[in-house]
Image (cartoon, rainbow, N blue to C red; front, side):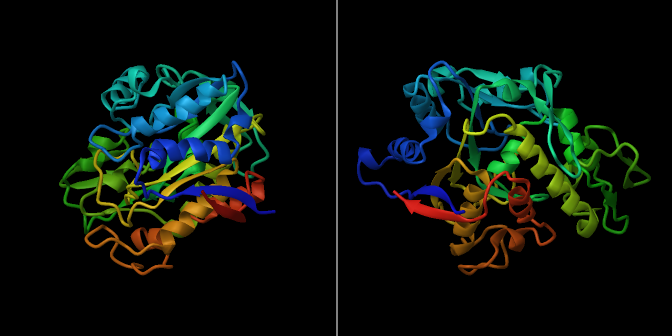
Length: 368
């Protein structure tokens, strides 16, 4: 059965057509208020952006969503979990400071910030799911215990997952560090002929698995947790992975974690995807590359699979922007994210999500 997905484009010639006004209409059309109730503690799951990144969701748009939640009488809080890798969001203190520096304070958004997994990832709930890889997922406590969940996602590319939308935001963003490690099944190696011994991989490795000796890097398989930071940061692309065997398992684990994040919240979860600044990389990287397609719009649904499927189709239908990281599959209708990262298999998260009952790949796109 096709799930309704509501779409608003970005044309505006009056205050009635501003992005904030369109968010209010999307919220109503998708009936997102139905997931709320007076007094219900509502986790607004989003990504605060890594320091150096500037294409994360606008706090002004987040404020527009918070206003609608409050109109329904619910009690929203902004939340995300700490990162697996070392960076500006590895613990709750640094994470909160990063969020505030990026403008997500109460005075702007109208909602307080709560780092979902606690100071160092200790706030955890074990959620049982019928996965073939994961049966007991480690979900951040504040997300698991929230009475409702509204997921706000910046739809963009991702060097491991192909693309990141609602499913990935649920999976990685709602897991504790232990849960993130469980999802990251790939293990990485180094091509000694390409490596220049710059040490970037060692600098970003959270476990010390990557090290440089005698002018070349190496990654210890026994301590590698598969987070992919070495792969993303290597300037020579000397870090390698067996994409044919490693990535499908990673994608399935990730999708199982998305299912765990919404366990017990049937009818109490909603999703909004922002197809703006469609960059090649996740907002976890400390930079923002040029977008690969023009800004498209904002979409909302109560089905995360249908929502991501609709966003993916809209990106593929768009013509590519000149001068971006995307160098092939430029024409309308071509698979843009495969053009970016030919080794990825992003549609697995849609196909397996449907198989798991997370949602439906079939959708009706309703333009407001």
